[in-house]
Amino acid sequence: MEAADPSCGIACCDAHNHLHDPPLQGCFDMEPGGAPLPRISAMVVNGTHPGDWDAVGAVAGPPGTRILRAYGIHPWRVGRLPPHWEQQLRARLRAGAASVGEIGVDHWIEPRDERLQIDVFERQLALAAELRLPPSIHCVRAWGLLLDILRAAPPLPRGFLVHGFGGSRETLFEILDLGGHVSFSAYAAHPRRQRAREAIRACPADRLLAETDAPDMVPPAAVCRYPLAAPDGAPLHHPAEIATATAFLAETRGEPLPLLAARIEATFEALFGRPADSHTGSISD
Ligand SMILES: [Zn+2]
Image (cartoon, rainbow, N blue to C red; front, side, top):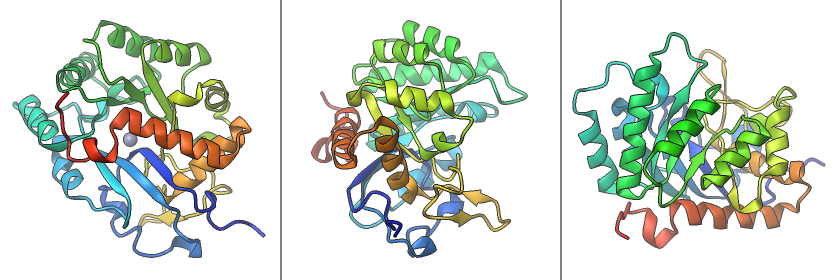
């Protein structure tokens, strides 16, 4: 019989989601699809623009889950920013954050103002360096640009995460050389995501994290254990699928799930901070 909880009761860590997004409101209030909810020990909830930072600050997770907060401006949201966004972001980060996110560069979205994307991204990387926070980075079809920017950026003492990694094996090793981590969701189970699966296998264990990016990047229906839909019927990625993601990574790498889950938790804490020092957003050395 199919195991209802793909992580078999093992605690999972979600390195990148958007739990504050309105479509996910109340998603942990009941057991979706009848499957028992997995244990999620921690998650990083990412803002995408000044208008959602209050919601990130107020979001509550399921009982027993440590909520870490990330504030940032997504490359799709760089237009029409308030004039003092940088000061507002610095204040948010200083008041309590574990990461600067979601930030990055994107050559897929149309139309786009590339110069503005780069400017906003570089300024947020500088804030991450100044406040000693690891950024959570989005990159689509802009790998060369991302690497150029990271090489020129001030050093990031805590490292950084490239979430939902979809680059080549060569790019993966460039990111690792720069001190980066990468994370993957069960979205990589889509047949066309062959390159992501190769990166999952090639990534050193101590740089690998699991994520959902919920409510976005919905995995193939065949692997989803916690089906969720928007009012218009469009499928959404339930954050409980972090258990599916963790099990998928273990299967793809051919590693025992308990071993991989424990290593992911240790890597997550090394990057974002342990319970005692990060969830209050301490930025001291
Ligand atoms: Zn995201």
